Image 1 (cartoon, rainbow, N blue to C red):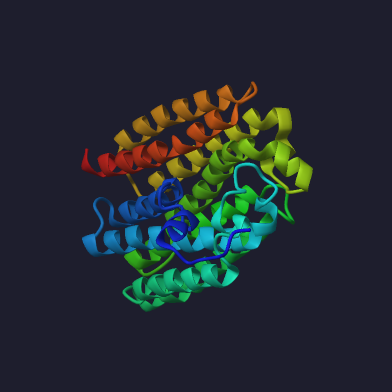
Image 2: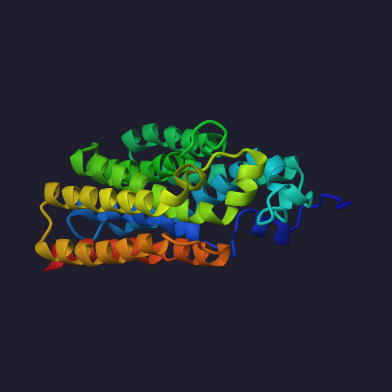
Length: 288
């Protein structure tokens, strides 16, 4: 029997410090929004706030997730060693860490304009709702996308003082992107999820997962194209977006066969590079 004890090692594993894929996937859509809103390179101050905010909110989000899922995590091979599921940390410890990160997020938000500050409680609400989505809806990945996508809305509002058409296109693109990459991620747990009754898009789509993921990526690219058109970006953006689309299509085709868990995780992680490539294509679209 493990005695719960607050330690730096347990905290770093609780917030996934050793694996920042989620932070990058949250951060890149906000940076897309900042670049499009600024029609090029955004102010360094806003860039720094949203980069720091992505790390802080992702850390808070995984703590919320582990608090909600600790009973499920004890029955899933991949998550049984998480500090809350294993009993290494107590609920009180996790709440203390959560309050710390939400306080840091609050400080960062106060550096923004009043309109963006008003939008910020929605981000916390969405982060809190996401862990419970798998109990209710068959595509909880959409809820993750909504939570991540709200960052694009806040970033646009912080840049322009309003929420305009391109921001909503980026929001919707982020939702589609998350459905795609998080469905791939969910392939790791299909056996355990089916056994314990957790809902998942990977379970819902089954043998048609490759079609669903390809459709989600296609919708993402169309929405990104629309966002660029509304922002009057240059042709280089669309050329690079086509190359990104071909890579995403190739990845979706890989899902036609059985995918081992380690392969699914690597495919999921590769979307950090997709996010980076989209950001580079936006900057290039305004420079050339």
